Length: 265
Image 1: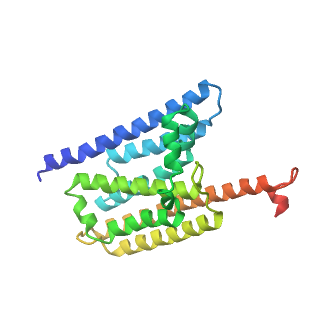
Image 2: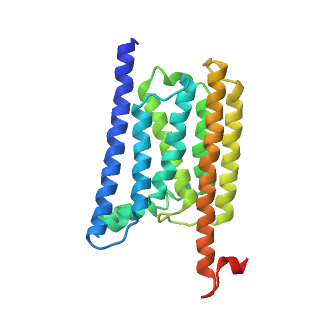
């Protein structure tokens, strides 16, 4: 593959990703505008969160990232698989769509997907965690990663899986949007701890050993592992804060009028 051909091939998936991200952001803003025009409340912070998530996807698709080759790749996948999904889920896009869509086939179809019995197992937190973190172990501890450089559309498919798995994991943990079954805090918290541990162990294995079939310089490998380790920690702490806030709010609803969670404790 010549350099020019390689650049063109890499450019097509990046351009497609950019168009899809911008379209999602535009659709979200139009739906939020529809709600506000009919007098319904919709917090602006959700608009900012969702569009920032889409914007981060555009940035990592188009802008060359600093650092060595593997470090840049790791930052890109950290944004795609953890940062962008958290920002998007905090925007509550499913709730927005359900409120903005008129009663009819489209709204019923979305509800059917969210509450689908066959898809139910995917929304079980441990299953979502295996699809998310397990996919990363498969990527970096098998020969799959070595094949990405010369196969742009395979790289695009892997990035799509990373985004989808990250969204599913974040969606099932936070439970901000409607789901068929709401799982309790102990299961979701335990899943977060287990997933964070598996993610950290993977990062440590990458600190001194390149993915099979590759040979990155030691300093590049170390910086990439650090980005994965510490960047993952930050997002996982943010997820823990979301879970804690949800628990605090739910506890407040269960208290008698005039009391507070502080008094209950």
